[in-house]
Image (cartoon, rainbow, N blue to C red; front, side):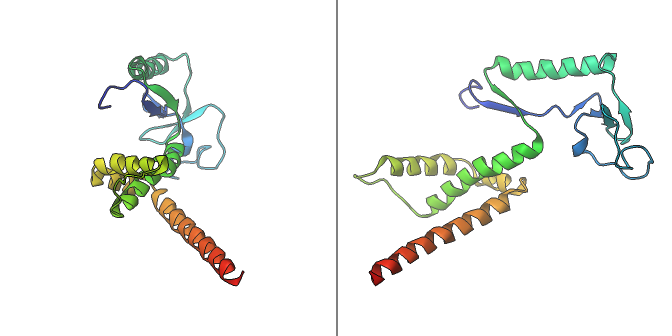
Length: 183
């Protein structure tokens, strides 16, 4: 962070220890083995070994596992000691949340920025918030915004939902306008 790490979110997922993938749903077997993974059945407590795709159990008392856990905890403690809010979260959930918070925020800021809005002598608190949104999002590079779009598979869905929502709001306005004409 520009002004330090205190109060910022540190999002993480424990995915592997010593080459062993801890989240089986993130790893696919190549289908060449006839172990329990390729048959769709899996032992409870089994893990996929990174690289080979082999299924095996990791014993929590093994020296490699203990060292791996210790290494993870020491790394995470750096950020915790800096005052970060530690947020354990899967990569999939992160991408969904990011599309629904970071990306939509930047998208709205960029769209509103394209409107050429400027402060007026009679600004409301809401409009001041809009101007602040434009300022904070357009202060970031367009490359950052593009990265939020390009590297998150949920971004296009967010754009489509925004378009549909805009259409719905305009439709309601036109319906009310028509009702006023007929009243």
